[in-house]
Image 1 (cartoon, rainbow, N blue to C red):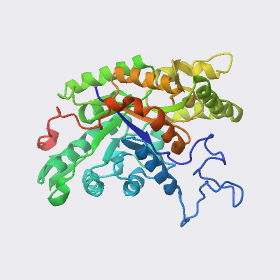
Image 2: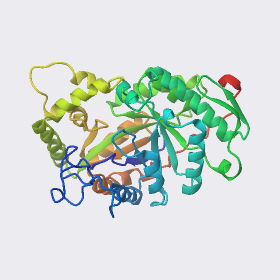
Image 3: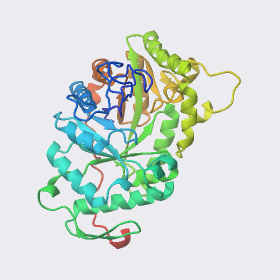
Image 4: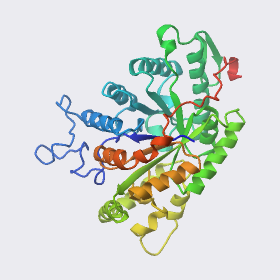
Length: 404
């Protein structure tokens, strides 16, 4: 079973300290001139160096250190991923860019035309991460009032139409959300490769959507056994679509690694202690109410009432797997914390239960890309293979009217 490694671009702010700290490189601030380091970003337009320049440094560092690609998440407080990744594609040579977006954001045709243009300009380095929102509150803030499960039904039609446009110059479709009368890619755009399709989510609707359409089903880290159970469930659903062997799985988990376990734990504890002083864990707990997605197993456990406040060591849910980031409000929530050898061992354990693609990042992203690239990735040279669509997946067939 092959393995590949991607990293992540910071949404905004480096989070070497807690979000909003004036020492965070690239973070937004309103402190005024002369009150911050030169690495911070103000709200002025036209600065000689912007936050995008810092992201370019991170992208180049991940490519230099052997990562296959980078993920950029989509949040209402950050830059728009597709735009940023289009800019960064011209700053790199081989690095692939995973852009997160919702079908709500684009019509199927706009998404197809934009993606084909990106593919031609970059040499087929675009990867789609199709998301459908984890918070009803945030969805409504951006104008989408479609209920959670219906958003996945809409996304299923979206992908049906995308594949139809991409593979047929004269595509017809009549569904609940979308219709098409004869459109499709033609000429040079038709030579571009359909992006790899990633998706994520733990709800029933998310699993069904991923089973039908995803090349890689992505998940946040839990205990290896819980990850294995989710993989088995999604594979079972994929079997109904003839895709049991076509779908693969990815895991997003941060990394805090040093030469010794003690040094790595000391760095993780620095984050934890700082959050305790600032009360960040209480703010993070309040924010969980915005989410509509199913809570992970350890998240449910940590919400159980107890007499005393939880301590740093309480958040090790598995050897070297620390859920403290989630407790203090730093996504994706879990980190591999330990010596280089420990982290390599844990990656192999997750790989053994079915994870083919790892999204690894640390804080600060720039320096930690070198650390992971120099001390972790070389251990997997023999198993490395670029993330790709499984060859057993049959090419899409022309779609009948009404999505039949």
